[in-house]
Every structure is written in C-alpha cells, then in structure tokens.
Image (cartoon, rainbow, N blue to C red):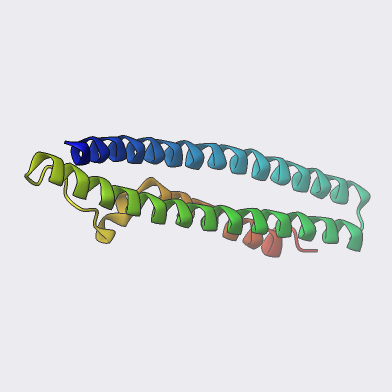
Length: 146
C-alpha cells in the first residue's frame, strides 16, 4: 500500500512539473516576443533617422548590426530553452506513462514518440524563433543596406 501512495504522489508531482514547463514556455515566449518587437522598433527608428540624414553613417549601421546580434543571442537562448523544456517534458511524460500504466495494470497512457515532435508547440516555437531571426538578418542585408 505504501508503494501505491508513493506512485500516486509521484504521478501528481510529475503532472505539476509538466504544467510548470508549459507555463515557463509561454512566459518565455511572451518575453521574447516583447523584446524582439522592441528591438525591431528601435531598428526601424534608426533606419528612419538614417533616411532623414541622407547619409550613410557607419554608427547607424553598427547600431542596427548590434541590435541584430542582441536579437540573435535572444533567439539562440530561446531555442536552447525550448529544447531543454522539450527534453524535460519528454522525460516526465515517459515516467508519467509508465506510472499510470503500473497503477492501473493496463496500458492507459502510451509512451511519447519522438516522431510526433512536429505536433509539439515547442517545435513550432523553435521554428518561429529561427525563422524570424533569419528574416531579420535577410532584411538587414537587403533592405537596410546602403
């Protein structure tokens, strides 16, 4: 009976940790989105200032380049964070499935499959972070070039 209590408690703990991971992903993405929006706004302001001066100023180009570097570092951090959350979630889900199946005596939860990663929201957040950063660098190279 003591083992059953432990398994039930462990299952509840795993569920709470999965919820925490989901909350962490959404909060991180909201902060990331706010920061890149601010960076894009600053870069646009710098570009407008550059067009009014009618001169190509290396300081302005350096400022935009620096902002894109900050943006890139934020994106790399977010991608690493998402991968970490995905690995943790996978591990928790695997343990949850095994515990649920042991508690019920039948297979009520299937083990997670890596082949289903394309369905996970974190996968698409990673694609979003990489894609929007790539578009920003492309825009700098083509649209903001002198």
